Image 1 (cartoon, one colour):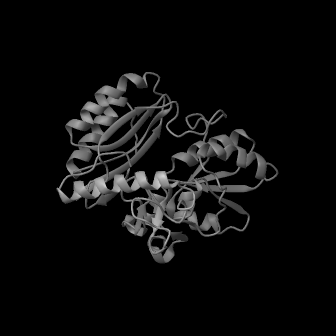
Image 2 (image 1 turned 180 degrees about the vertical axis):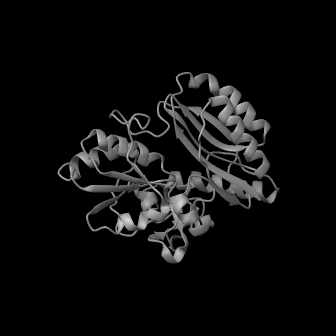
Image 3 (image 1 turned 135 degrees about the vertical axis):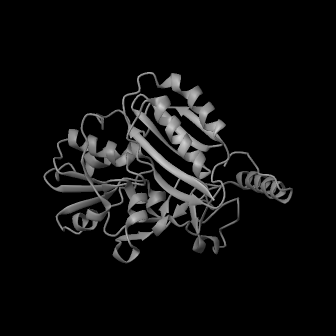
Amino acid sequence: MFKVAALYKFARLPHYEALQAPLLASLTTNAIKGSILLAAEGVNGTIAGLPESIDKALMALAEITGIGGIEPKYANAATMPFKRMKVRLKKEIVTIGAVKADPTERVGTYVEPADWNALVNDPDVILIDTRNSYEVGVGTFKGAIDPHTESFGEFPAYVREHLHNQKHKKVAMFCTGGIRCEKASSFMLNEGFDKVYHLKGGILKYLEVMPQDQSTWDGACFVFDERVAVEHGLKVSDFSLCHGCMNPVSAADRESPKYERGVCCPACADKLTEKQKASNRQRQRQVDLAKQKGARHLGPV
């Protein structure tokens, strides 16, 4: 059984470029796989490994970066959910674009999962899902607004266009692990909203600790690894990933005549060219052949 740790922390890292090589070396030595982003504003990522290796990796991460107080969200996986270990340098650990949004300066009010239901059941609260449309389609909180964004960088424009006259109202936001909400809440405070709340630990923490019979969550939560989506208790849900468009595919989608494993799904079947579909079929044949030989295909996913 592998242990999966999703983590982030906004912190000042002016020399983050110098941390890439030693961090990658340390994680690789501990047989850790996954992805870590480093930027001047902090660290973000998800890693997996054996439980004792994950503990060592998190200690090394704190020591190398000098960042304390990271609160990972943990889950288990029967198989390794990543193919390799990557440590990448970015301008932002979560990209919102050229707006004023610095969670190290100001951020909205954190709401513990145990207090979340009471807040969002208030009829005067505007509940916003800050994630992208394909994530919202997998699951969301009942009554939440879907901004219909394709990337987080579109969120500021949505706020300025649709919420500019509601700055006096309470706004509650949520995302997968909490990172997008921290930045979104900082942005909204700087835009003049004064009652901004966000779910501490994100959907993952809520699904981990909230009993299902008390939950207001509907569906599953998309995650950015080979588990694809998780449910209450962070159990792996019955979703796969379409390699034609990289959208999550439900069990119902897989029954559609427009679904072809490794090639296309109902969301992209009519958009892909025959040449693209042929390329996807060739890739799937390589995946299947590698599996038959007991190997793992390490091409792009």
